[in-house]
Image 1 (tube, helix red, strand yellow):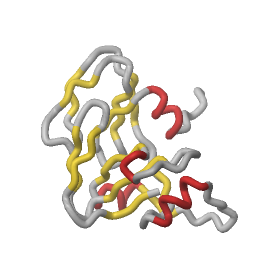
Image 2 (cartoon, one colour):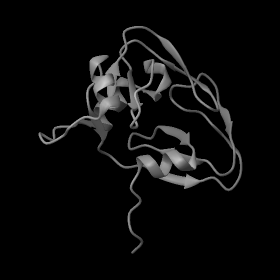
Image 3 (tube, rainbow, N blue to C red):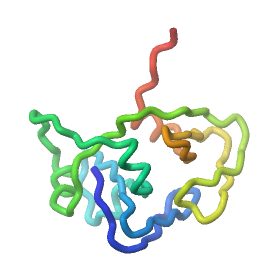
Image 4 (tube, helix red, strand yellow):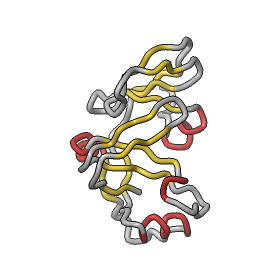
Length: 140
């Protein structure tokens, strides 16, 4: 689920505070439970140009949104999915990472995933989030 924002906002994540500019897209992971406020859902900013290259509109006519998805739809979000893959490495050591939306590099601890998106954008996420959001191809 995603929506465009019209004014700059900061989004506090576990390791950093990201800045989203007017016109950027906020992507929400709705889960199964309705939250009181939009900011209570897991969410993150994506630069508009990156979003256009990487995400596609969900167009399944059989889709039946759950309660959380309906809540987000009622608050201006539309269904999208990430249509392009990522390169990812589970970090064996802590390293500095500079994401597109972060004003400065942050130390990402060992055990988190360093992801590089299809447009070269670096970001990180927890083990649980990684396995929830991505399908890992079978080993050949």
